[in-house]
Image (cartoon, rainbow, N blue to C red):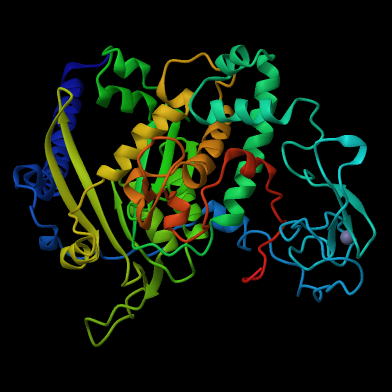
Length: 477
Ligand SMILES: [Zn+2]
């Protein structure tokens, strides 16, 4: 057993040590806490121009999608072969200028509008034309490479079923309406979604926009709708779940630049911004408006940044390290909404990159102020059109993939098939309609038409029958 004096001596040493440690730790703790504690007490700056400028990053943020794909989509293998001008026979009646030879070994394979394709009529009285490539002598169907190829089902039925899916009916509901097996509908959706993605990729590039609104909405809304949990709680609970729908929209043309599903993380934000950059024309740096998610700033910096060498402050010593800074054209503002008891109490604007004046100038061209209202309108439309996002539906595809496929279909349907009421243009000459209806005074326009990507309103049948060329075709074809 320990003797009493030794015990007290040890106790004294322990106390002295404790006092010393407290002395060391206490002021240090206060010193670090010092600058952070008064911060919430300070009123948040109303004008973000008061904020000090962004200091830059010492490292370039990495984007996984950029690392994976160095090329921007599929590239043509070289120059297109010369155009074939027919010299013999009667002029061709059927327009085959949108078709291409599917053979990889053919010189004309993959090239559109070079005069090598001839229509051959309907073999065995079938619904689809046979096409002939005069370069390689090959034959193929006009549905080659589309979801309608090789289907025994009536084409109308497939188109209608896909239309019902695009309009927001769940897979089981579509199966009931069209009296087919739910798994058949699911397999159609999977094929159509692949086609829709290729279709979007083919048409959506070199887009010039002045503004982009980014938003993410969570797919599982049922709990919030039922009032079981608060929205903040739901966001917290779902922030790691992969059921966030991310969308980027040009509020001027209403074009949906990209739509994707994933978790609410930096990697996903970077992926979405990466997809937006793929769609935009090279050198196009629009104004970005988002909600308060802080990952957007880094994601934008990843793709719209450059190295800056800061000037020396002192004459001696090492030169300051270069900083990764946003490109000077980049304008980015956040619209931060404070919701209390499901009521909007405050909307704050936070300029992150650029100046408030420059941002207001871009918006004033459209007579607008900072907001993300357009995006929220689109959110509502997405909820209405994508079964898994909007309602408590027992769709077959509960996973991320099923949602992604419905979104891919909706992406094309929204951009190319649905005329937007706000985009219609008045006709110079009113067109009389059949029967007793009033004259037609407006020309309907889709977002893709407003963005200059196409000059027609596509029907879903036309989309499904469009043979997507394997690479971008030269302009003027
Ligand atoms: Zn060929």
